[in-house]
Image (cartoon, protein in one colour):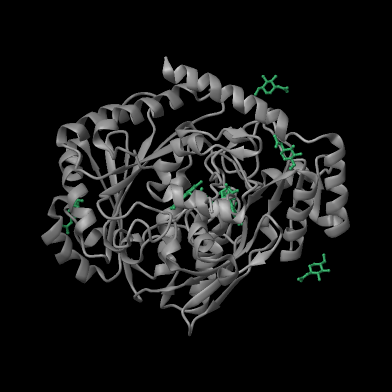
Length: 517
Ligand SMILES: Cc1cc2nc3c(=O)[nH]c(=O)nc-3n(C[C@H](O)[C@H](O)[C@H](O)COP(=O)(O)OP(=O)(O)OC[C@H]3O[C@@H](n4cnc5c(N)ncnc54)[C@H](O)[C@@H]3O)c2cc1C
Ligand SMILES: *[C@@H]1O[C@H](CO)[C@@H](O)[C@H](O)[C@H]1NC(C)=O
Ligand SMILES: *[C@@H]1O[C@H](CO)[C@@H](O)[C@H](O)[C@H]1NC(C)=O
Ligand SMILES: *[C@@H]1O[C@H](CO)[C@@H](O)[C@H](O)[C@H]1NC(C)=O
Ligand SMILES: *[C@@H]1O[C@H](CO)[C@@H](O)[C@H](O)[C@H]1NC(C)=O
Ligand SMILES: *[C@@H]1O[C@H](CO)[C@@H](O)[C@H](O)[C@H]1NC(C)=O
């Protein structure tokens, strides 16, 4: 009863806020005039431009989020320098038109280019601001937010064969969104989340000011390193510490079916993988009746085999499974397959299908009986997949409050659930499976709060209610504590410092809290 009343109120508020936030035709026209006066016209794509749709879909990574009913932007701005971004914000403030910022467009709910509710907004697409400058002797790189991870990896490997960037698996991800949510990949046990390597950043705030680490202040610099995209302004560039890698890494992919003992091996994996030496990372893709163990070892096969023999003999690793290569070769190998080349990681075109995902964190080993039931779920006709990434090592060594990304000590592994469907169906059966699986997993995963990873964004975890232009803290807390645990409140105060009027906002942006003097 109570919850349905809360829901009714929430709906009422969001309904009111829709009307409050849709500006008049006059303000839309004024906004476009303001943009035209400050930004070259060839960098602006209004809805009547023939290139509007091609530019908009250029980095839509999930067709579910782009249909004939999608709430699209009034205009897409493709800045080539910081002053264009500053002008877009100033014009947006003046004419009360919101901005959504897009780097790589991989947002799981498309919040970088569409609105869930009726809204007049512009997209600032950073696709043309993507330079990567590597300083090999200092071991650092300055990276524009519009670069893809593949472009960063490539530039780092060209500058030095001994350095890497500790980031994610998919080379088309944008640096802007990735770092905004924490970011992790095959090096997470050795070097932590990607934001753990951020040294500096430049931010355009809601006043249109360009701020570096010092100028934005301690709280805001803390908040932008994992506190989620969009909330604090537009991050234009990041300075990161690169990490050393050996000349040879060893990759393996070993699949085990349930008939070959996958249940026992996973039951063992979940306690072994988070406790292995940090040089060894073993993730698992669990699908249908099989588990594929995908691994990177920072060393040679000769060193890996005895380690696996003593710590995880159940996997039966032998020399035929080893693939020795350089770190940069491991990037296409793990994500694009063994025939892909290093140049393929520069390809920004993808062919992603319709899908929906959500996430969990596991802090206690799942009993063998639980894994058996998980395989029952994965055997259903509408089933999707489950990807598990072990933690421990460096990612778990930082205190939960070091950055907004709170998934640290005590986490055994992250789960990403994902389901896919073809255009021939509406996906409702697959989404139901995903939700049923998430419900089934409740007793096995973290609770109070049930932790989730913001970069695997799921709007079903909760959406903001906006009253009088301000996102309510209570509405945001529902999803916010899942993504950020106790860091959520501190994020809200940081938001209150940098954007008290809540100019930058979306369905899951941080609400502003302003400290009473
Ligand atoms: C195929 C695929 C594989 C993935 N693999 C991994 C993985 O291995 N590891 C991992 O950690 N994550 C992974 N992710 C998740 C990914 O990290 C997030 O989706 C991330 O937010 C994408 O960043 P983006 O710039 O591409 O997305 P966008 O859609 O451009 O942005 C995401 C959010 O950040 C905001 N934002 C974007 N740029 C900026 C900026 N410059 N300043 C402020 N806010 C900004 C947007 O408004 C939006 O809210 C994967 C996603 C996909 C689709
Ligand atoms: C949108 O597309 C769907 C099919 O995907 C179609 O049934 C519907 O009529 C279309 N609506 C409009 C307004 O074009
Ligand atoms: C940005 O580009 C504009 C041209 O659109 C140019 O006039 C301006 O000087 C540039 N600003 C900077 C800081 O490079
Ligand atoms: C290596 O393991 C595979 C099974 O995964 C097995 O088929 C093969 O015979 C093994 N090779 C050696 C040399 O032990
Ligand atoms: C880039 O990737 C897309 C999708 O996988 C593919 O169709 C295309 O051929 C690739 N382009 C190049 C230049 O390799
Ligand atoms: C929201 O802000 C706009 C200006 O940005 C203002 O015109 C409007 O009155 C505000 N609405 C409320 C309810 O405060």
